[in-house]
Image (cartoon, rainbow, N blue to C red):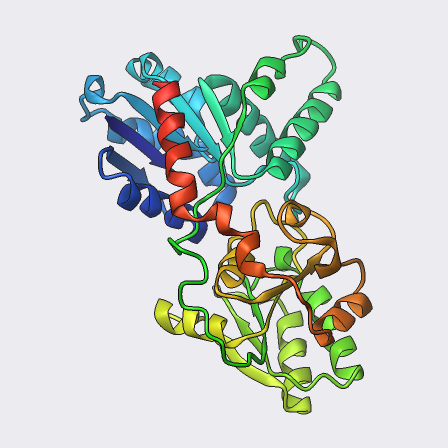
Length: 351
């Protein structure tokens, strides 16, 4: 089977997904066309222009399927490249623009939302990485369409919703917990992108509450950073430094060193305002970290109630408490051995 894979805004999680599929399905010949994750508003609306240009030199008849991320303007691309419309297409939603917190102009958000609706309708099959992602997409899309003045067909997305799949991004760990140590763990790790949607203000409040309770463990702040780092992160670092509780801080380039830190820590903390799967938390859980996460978003799908919080004060209490759940078993179904047959079935039934 040969699959044309389109990823026009390839963030770290998108790249992880693509490379995992390529490595784990050797019987599939993927032809990836990727673009860097920058200039979001332009990329979402303009990616079909560049993709169409690239596809001019391709013999499309050799492809059995098209696999595109939801960032792809698939409807426009099929119009620009008519031969593409003859190939069965799957759209994979890593996220959706309806449950994503926006900090820019509302007009840009609506443009991205409308584009994602067109993309879903232009696909033969739509796939989401979580039930939360699926449900918020269709709820948001239908709510937006109801606000339009006229000319919106009834039940426009009904068929699309009925046949939607939920297939998570597989964890890089083939066998969760394979390197689990019996040694006593210590430390709290916050391992997310250093951006506003990951809740730096909430993180600051949680850290203050944790220190007020007399927390003694080091807090590690690791994750992808960008040129502009939200100011609240500086306050978090200063607060931890003054208390002598700051562990590692910044991005860890070496993956094995990163995994080694996860295996040493007792708890993985999230303060996210949006999360459609939560790969960072899942990876830490697969290495034995106990989760402390918001009681919202995707987390109820795999994190038990006793590990979810509703306020910074409640989060601090959970960080102090020695929990007795087995985090590894909670994410075993996300491992590649469990997910590979589902991906094969998806490609088989969609061809």
